[in-house]
Structures are given as structure tokens and as C-alpha cells.
Image 1 (cartoon, rainbow, N blue to C red):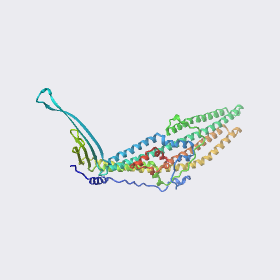
Image 2 (image 1 turned 60 degrees about the horizontal axis):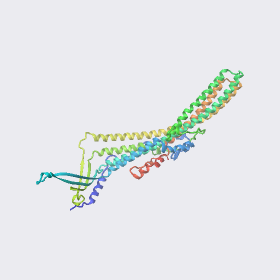
Image 3 (image 1 turned 90 degrees about the horizontal axis):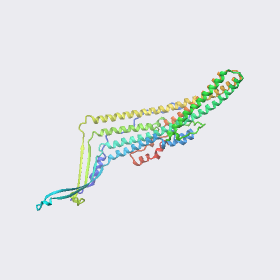
Image 4 (image 1 turned 120 degrees about the vertical axis):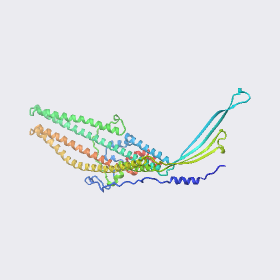
Length: 499
């Protein structure tokens, strides 16, 4: 007679086992010192302290068509972003692997054997030899094994891998933002090269005109012959500088192509006579920076992962319990395998505990705690660096704005001074050295003003990146929820890291 076993006690036992405790410390984000306001903020008039920061396609604030065209391509074509996206998908898969430890392993085993054996010789005649007997046997069994997570080792591992996956997702967002800022930087540098080329082309034309004036005077013997040679040398040096700018421009163009996932020869960027405009950037308050910087979120999630690793190490001190069950049929001979009479089952359990390990477990716990303390230091250091980055950007924008105002006046004076020196030279009241000095001063002042304009644009791009580019840690997905994790792993979701 087959005994009927009630499933209620088994269900109750399973619930009790699943509800086991979780050893190790629960995670709490450490406190960090956050200033009330950015120190350099009052000196920058474009700042808006009450705003929350750049949103969406932040690059449109530069009013550059090339940026508007290329920035969205970084998300889908940049190879650094693609690598970090693959790393994120791998981290999501590791969470699935860890979650499998909560469930039993179920298997099916089937076997069949055909055996031939001799039963002895006959008594009537030896010519018949031995009688051969064939025996068929087989089995069909299902088996279940399960190691209940009594001490939370599996759940801590899931917690650890989930935090690591979120750190990987934040790293993906940080890589995307970094590559987009790098693209904006390269475009600004390209535009500055174009502006410098325009400036030198205008200067070459002015020097060519001046050389013709000097040459005419030389025909009449009213100037020293050395003036013509000096004017020709000045023109040639400026033409050489103009040619050299082509090298830098080509390198910026190649860098832009690689940033958007193209071969350098596949992207040709026409010369532009327009510089990007300086965007207005809402800075916000320092406390929000902790949620807006993806690198800070990466460090924070790594810290949570290391905290969970302590629980995994502590769980090794406790015994491991394993349950197993077998249910199926076995029969020899094979006929009637699935009959009730051939039904077999078994239940079993085992527990193992390490009595002495030479300090291995205590060492693992100590190592996990040290790794956590290192992650805490890294988190706090990342926060401090973030504040430093923003303060540097703000101070740079403030000081460069003052320098730009001064240079605007200097450019006007230098331009006027070169015109006066040329007129006086033609009137014979000054020598060539005065004109050459005035012209060199004009060009140097104009190039300095252009460099300051470039530096302001670069600092603005850097500030946008250091403020997180509109990203928020609320965009992180919980990989322990399969639907949410699947959404996070989609290409469309990856494209939103810059939005």
C-alpha cells in the first residue's frame, strides 16, 4: 500500500527555511559633509542657485549644429559606451545566477541496461553448449536537491550582485556622459581652430598689403632695404602658422569621428565661421550633486556591494543544510517499469559544519570588512572630488569672464594702435620696428582673446559634465526585478542615460 504524505507540513517547513535570518550588517549609506552653497557660485552671474541643473539634450545650449547632429550618436555608436553597456548586461546576468540559489534544482534521470549471461550447460548433449539468457533492466527517476538559505548567504550574494549591477549601470551613464563631454570639447576645439584660421587669413591679407606698401617705398629708395626683408619674413611666419593650424584641425576632426564610432576618413566637417555660444547653466545646490553625478552613484553602489560581501563571509561560520528527494520507478526485467509495484522514493537531508579551518573564515570576514572600508573611503573621496570639480569650473568661468572683458578693450586698442603705426610709417614719422611691434601685438592680443573664449566654452562643457549632465540616480533600475532589469537592458533605455 502506498503511503500518502501531506504537503502542508512540507510547505510550512519550506516557509520556515526561506524565512531564515540574514547574517552580516545591513547597509546604510555613510554620511558625508556637504556645503550649503558652492563658494564660487556668487561670482558667476550666469548661475541660477535654485535650479536643478541641465536637463535633456544639454548640448543644444551651445547653439552648434554639429553638436546637435553628433551628440545623440555617442549613445549608440561610441565603442567605450558599447563596452560598458556589455559589462552592464553581464552584471545583470550575474544577478540571475545568484537568484537561482534560492530555488531547488530539479532533474530527471533515465537509464536502460541490456545484459546477456550464461545459465550453464545441458545434461543431454554437450553440443548444445551454454544457454544464454538476456536480461533488460531500466529506471526512470526524478530528483530534487535544495540547500535552504538559512543564514542569508544567497540573499546577501543577490544583494551584492544587484548593487554591482547598479554600479555598472551608473558606470555606463558616466561613460556616456564623459564621451559626450569629450565630443563637445573636440567640437569646441575644432571651432576655435577654424576661428584662428580665419584670424590668420585676415592677418596674412593685412601683411600682404603692408608688404606691397613697403615694396613701393623701397622702389623710391625712401626706406631701408631691410624693411622689405622684415615685412616679407613677418608675412612668411604668419603663413607658416596658418598652415600649421591644419594639423590640429585634422586631429580634432579625427577625434570627433572616433567618438561617434566612425572611421576618421568617413567624417568630413566643413569649415565654420561661427563659434559656439556660451550656455546658461543652472548649478543648483551642493547637496543635489550626490544624486546627479553617476560616478558618485557608482562609488555608492560599490560600497553597498562590499557591505553585502561581509554578510556572505559571515554566513560561512554557520552550518550548511542540504535536502534531497528522489521519486521514480526501477525494474528488472524492463517490462512493467511504470507499475505501482516498481515505484521507489526517498527523502534525505544533510548538514555540514567546519570545525577548524586555520583562520580561513575569519580572514575572509576581515578582508570583506577592509574592502568595505576602502569602498567608503573611495565614496567620500569621489564626493570631495566632485565638489572640487564644480568649484574649479565656477572659478574658471568667473575669472575668464573678467579676463574676457579686459581683452575686449585690449583688442580694440591693439587694432587701433596697429592702424596708427602703419599710417605714421607711411608718413615717415616712425620706423619699421614700431609697425612690426604693433602688428605682432594686435595678432597676439586677438589670439589670446580667442583662447580665452575657447577656455570659457570648455569650462562650460566641463561644468555640465561635473554637474551630471541632467542625470539622476533615480534612473538606476533594480536588477532584482526581472521586468525592470529587462527595460534597463534595452538599447532605448541605454539612450536615456544622457537625457
